[in-house]
Length: 497
Ligand code: NAD
Image (cartoon, rainbow, N blue to C red; front, side):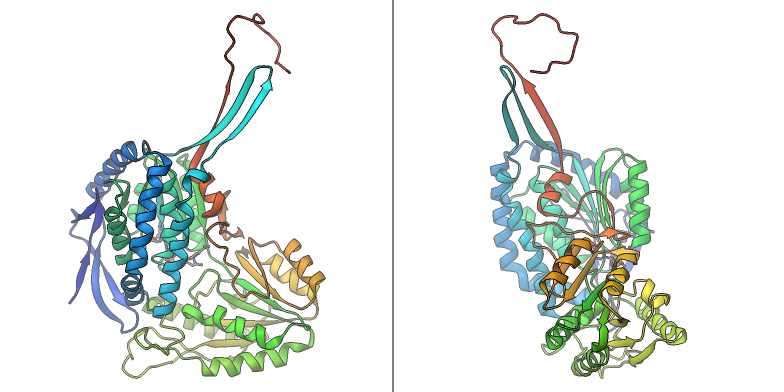
């Protein structure tokens, strides 16, 4: 039966004031399974009022008291992980284990945020001048915002709101309209954990809601994750409206395979990284750079493994990857494959016209492999965001590094090698935010920070870890002395001792 997704305002599900609803599809079957409200200005105003009230109460909680609510939340997520994963798989299509994994990675941010009393400890310097002490603290910002993409409906929001809330802010989440249900469930569980009303609100809708959020003067900060053109738009317009902003965009991640690498290990790494979640990960490997004379062997082995890969519905435990998110995205990816052929790349495995019995209307594509891709081709330059891997042949390490460094995106990269000196040179010199050595997807844990360079991140702060704590707080530095009597009269030069 078709369901309706509304907003979550003031600690409860709140029916929208709008009559306008957007369709939600099940990518596995292609059926419309529900609708989500496209919020109107009244909904938006309710959210802002509630978030202000929430902030006034919550920012006065001691960090320790906030931490106790987060510990409760952690337990509730653990109890509900299977249910949340099913919601993610139904609306996204990724396999159940992959969906569970993404929730656990989000949970790790909650676990990190449980340590907020320690994370907010300030700095203190005694006797910065004679009898003068100085210290600094980090204070919450106010109302903070998260605008998130379809590919991780639980994990990406959880990179943001647990830490922002732990820091004492209120938070408004605007999830992807393609799969909004999990956000509501996450908000309900936080309320059950003891979060006061209004501290976490969920506003559903499309870009209209986003524009209200980035323009409103009561809002302090914007965290965005999505495609690069929108990330750039959000960065420019949020800054214009004097917001603090971190805006994460798209990617084209290279995995460099050196001639001295263990090829089988590299192939295992490439398979999961290129085709897991149907390539719809911002850290997916979409380019394998084969260095020197290993290219033929590498392509042959990737192709053999790709033939064995099983695309299928998430309800089937044997599926390695599911469908892509929508009919439009499927068409866009198929067009990229056709473009690659036209441009002269060698199509080794064609994922177009891929049908699964019983799921003929699902948005499935098979694992696609191109060889002899060159840097001037569109399929190399642009993000495809689907199960399409391009192999580029490089004559040596220097050429491989220059490919990585000259690409417009700078999210992640990785090198497979048995040479420590080469690995060290790569980690030092790659102009990329997250770098792996013999690790295919170098996603940092919650206590480190996630973020790319170049067209993959606009703004100064990455997500979660200490970068997250700094993004969601503002620094205040105090200087004080307590003399009994006037010691020195008025001074007209800068004091230096
Ligand atoms: P998207 O940019 O289409 O949408 C992201 C969010 O922005 C959604 O909530 C959407 O409603 C909103 N939005 C869309 N168009 C808008 C507009 N014109 N104005 C204002 N808001 C708008 O992205 P998507 O298709 O949902 O997600 C896939 C993209 O996200 C890929 O490019 C992927 O690489 C990227 N991504 C990046 C990271 C990262 O960490 N860098 C992580 C996950 C996904």
